[in-house]
Image (cartoon, rainbow, N blue to C red; front, side):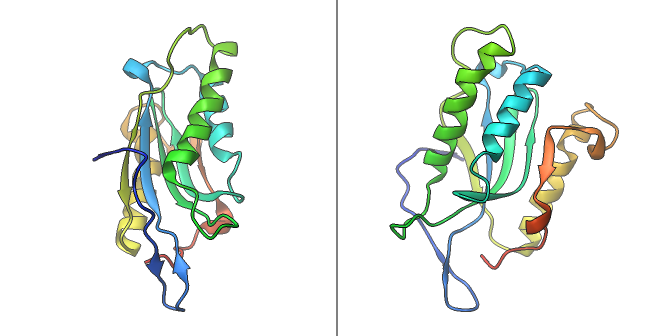
Length: 165
């Protein structure tokens, strides 16, 4: 499902009675499936990780040649509202699109508008999505084992399933 930026923020009441921001599986693609070279993938990975632990937590992410997958949970701002997926991706796409031309010959638009996002609704879906992200470079035939793909990462400190369900 393609989502715009005007969504209301939705929170879950976790088992301890605190409001917890939901977790999302987010995918965004390059413009006209532009293939990012290795240096550009590194730029995108660093842009994704820049506010990790400050504005959001990324449980897993992968930068593929023409798209990115993130398993992400926005954090609360001081105002008590969450960072939106739209504002997070605006930051990632904006920064990386300015940096990519310095590492690969490309002029013009880098990212498609919008994104695909799915709210994660439980432990089983979280684990399946985590596995999907880890296997994406293998399923695409880029590597024989995900451990050999340098643009795939998981946050070891958030390896357990969070209390957002």
